[in-house]
Length: 119
Image 1 (cartoon, rainbow, N blue to C red):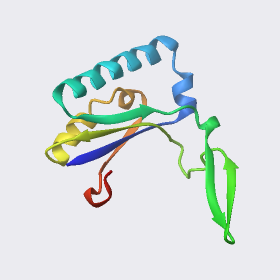
Image 2: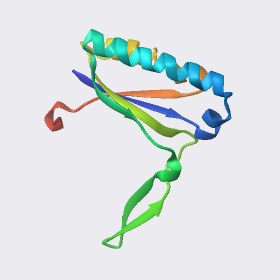
Image 3: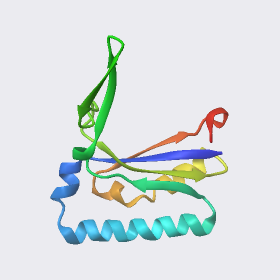
Image 4: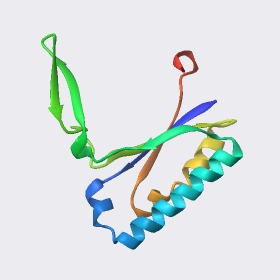
């Protein structure tokens, strides 16, 4: 079963961390990704650019409206994602617990990929 690990953090909090701490988190993150590739769990993912680069589309009165920014109703922003192959939710949660930004205030949403719509 595939799971999406959606990694979120308050961008202001992340940017406020000392450079050395951010570098340590990202070094640990790179090691985790390599571990997941080696173990065969990793199917793909990416780190996203700043929310300042986001564009949100909405439909109003039958017309598409484009807005600058993420406009999510959350203090945290989606910073990246991973798709992993796991036996079950417990195994996916085990991988998610290892995501380094958790230790500096991030969160990870773990959600099964719907097999009926998987590409």
